[in-house]
Image (cartoon, rainbow, N blue to C red):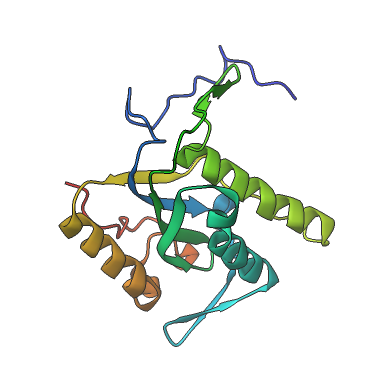
Length: 185
């Protein structure tokens, strides 16, 4: 079904005029549709991954194999979302010819193109392996990491995230609680 731009007024959550393909570190959070716990369950502060969760983790680790200059830093696959730090490093001459459609402007080798390819690959695996009920939430959360202190806080947040699942706003048992994401000031 085609989307009607007059009916579905979409507002970008990205920084206006920021080049998300430039060298830097990016903190991303990607959620499952309706926060369904498709990736696993929590047991004693640790995530026990389902088959989909294992694939989501495996494909995260493989991102640098498919995107020159991309490097995975700290990440965690939670029951219904993923937190990751993705670094984009300099690599020779790159083609940043934009891929466009009516609703978005995505730049090749940008954090957006990496996340789109990642989500598509996990979804495709699910479809061909009998998990065609699996869906992602539209879009993703991203934060441009601006300095070492910010990076250190985010890494700590990611490592400790499983221990704080009982308080996490993404935990379906905690609907209405405020998000526990690190400050981004």
